Length: 321
Image 1 (cartoon, rainbow, N blue to C red):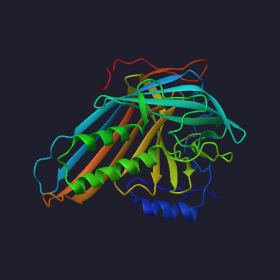
Image 2: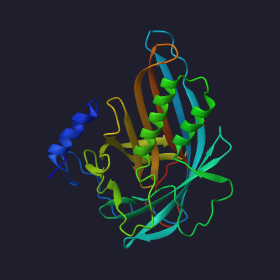
Image 3: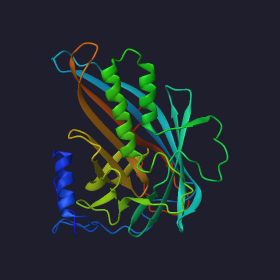
């Protein structure tokens, strides 16, 4: 069985979902005549303990009146995110590399942290379906200053809601829904549960070999998440010029105008953009508004330990802020 080959851009997600269900699932879908890129091996993603990545993260909100009046400028909150591979854990007989993530928000006094567990073989990159809020057994207390578990830019969204006391109830409800929906899509492992469960499932984050037109199922339950490789791109980031695969993540959680794009390369995760839109009636004014939230994570620095396939071309770009 194979995924049907779908030009999903601009196609409503329910239609994509129906085609996927009817067409079946496979990790080896390929359109003849499309150039196949060199096959990745089990060392494609740099899962080396001690490696570190630093990101600029942002959460922006636009509330656009639909009566033709001028659009106000977007409101943006920023943070610095750091990811470090700290060691290994074993679940269900499989060894995973632990990624510890800390978020330092400009607009909030607290820091936030999560833990994810990854493994890799010649078929792909996998993440254990474990609660990201729970530290490894070797961590007995939070690091100094880390007072709560958080979910990347979603922490910035919660900070925005706390600061904006003048939002109407309807607009606030939409923003809460955006934050929750984006969190459940981007933070694919479970948000709660018991990591002591001996039967740990895992999600297929990347399916090798990566190439344009490749498609696979990331998660089937409770909401289907599938991935499509759209293209091979060259990114000019503050960290340097890097080659990456642009991958679109589709889900029943997303509406027609929504999207999540991620860029992965031999240097790791390089960029993520989550864009959500909702039309609503402002309960305080009666006006119809379009509410757009966008969360962006971009690599600004990295340090890969040991040998890896990571290659960075220096550029003259300054950091994005």
